[in-house]
Picture (tube, rainbow, N blue to C red):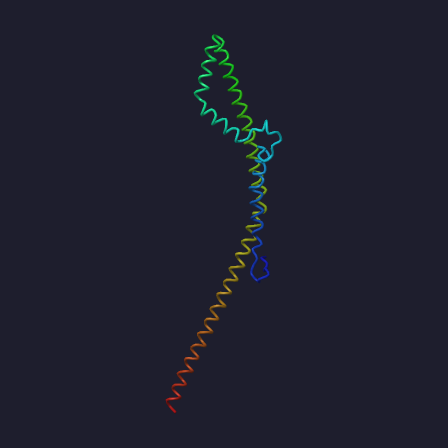
Length: 180
């Protein structure tokens, strides 16, 4: 049952369970992401590859694309007959790198989806308490509002009766003054 606070009003004690549910639902995945992707700790800055490094690589490739093409053409002309073999080897290394990246990303995404599922499952308990207590609070508030409305209606009715009585007394007084 909802409790009264120091001011005599109903306390919203259910709110802390909603906050706890949100903390579990969103805090665990965010914590996992920061841990898995090493976002806030840098053990060795020289080998740490963060989002900024990827951004710099992409910008560098974009700006120096023509220069890279020129280097590849020069390399192709300088190697002669061996260039076709080196190209196929390079292509297979690139394919390997792509597949390895996909496997690593897939395993990270797999664990990330597991973390999201687990955190949602763990947040069910606090949310169940939250909605139960919120429903109890709303029921009590409904009853309180009904009583307050009845009390106000009774007060208005009593005030109206007093007004009618005073008007009736005024009429009677006027009638008695006329008779006198």
